[in-house]
Image (tube, rainbow, N blue to C red; front, side, top):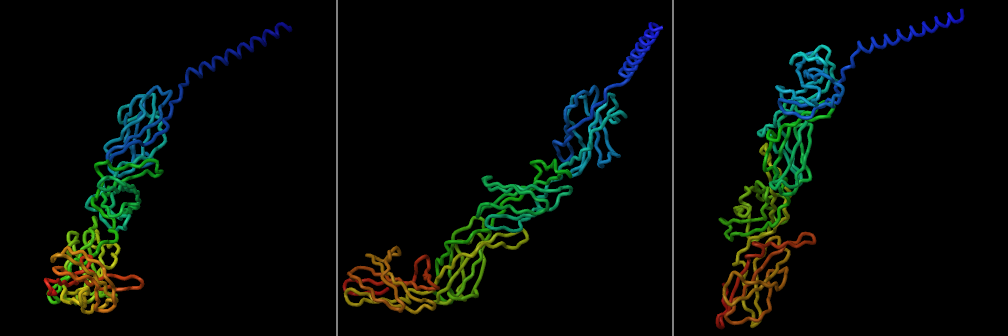
Length: 439
């Protein structure tokens, strides 16, 4: 009985093992490996009509890759297509609209469907948002709005679909270039070089919602505006070059150092201690070296002051002004207002008419063997009076030139009321034989 029971148990165990192996074989032979899902899908390129997406290499796929694109993240309305064999890792979507957002997927299947209908068993990747490039910025819509000595502000017309703009500022040597990104339709470039004109390029951009990709217009489709200036710096070198001695019909002429970015210059002329301008005016950028002011409001023997500032023209027709120059003081005085005569054998006595506003006068003496406009003068003294006696050795056949410069003192600073850097308020005389001649 015991031997018979052992045989039954062995038989039962063998039967159980046989059935288990059969079930395992049946399960293995009837189940295929799962189709792998595409991962790492991302946008890598864009234009106004195309986008390119890539993904990680799909391992273990014995089949095909498909693609589809939709204007909605739900992918309920989409356009599908065959992408390629299981070895490809990128594809292009074409025929799109500029500055738009789309949603794409890549899918895998072991079956081969037609080009526009992927197989029903396609395993799709996660939905990825992509964007096309916007149109370019309109050149005619770019305006120059304002500037400082080291910055330029511009604005432009919005481009449909653009979410931001990239601006590049560079000078004619393409030096000191800076880049600015703006979320609106205006921007300011800072840290620029003084007295320099810049070209401004503006590139329209569109980013996806996660800011992982930004589509930008092509390098040939940007908007630009050239010769946009920084604000002119303070004008230097202001000088009265000429002051006609005729009160009724005369005029004054001024010049100053040229500013390379200025569209023009504005000037104001005041009485030496005045707070309200007697006359104002403006000239274009070509007239910086020859500015005439009619003498109707300018009187003889009176100290005046002039200041100048440069400006540039903004797109709206208004002017942006630079800083005012320092004042240049000048006065109107004729050579006939200065007299001189010989006083003994070694003195020249000179006198002149009073100049309103002058706190004192500087007297210069020059000599030459003949009349000349290139006489070199030497300062001989300063006086508050309207006369001065010069001690010098007077020789025959010598010319003696006397020049008088009226000065105006403000605070601790003394300003010379000069013309052409020195003065034209002079007279001269010479000894011809034993006769003293005044000219």
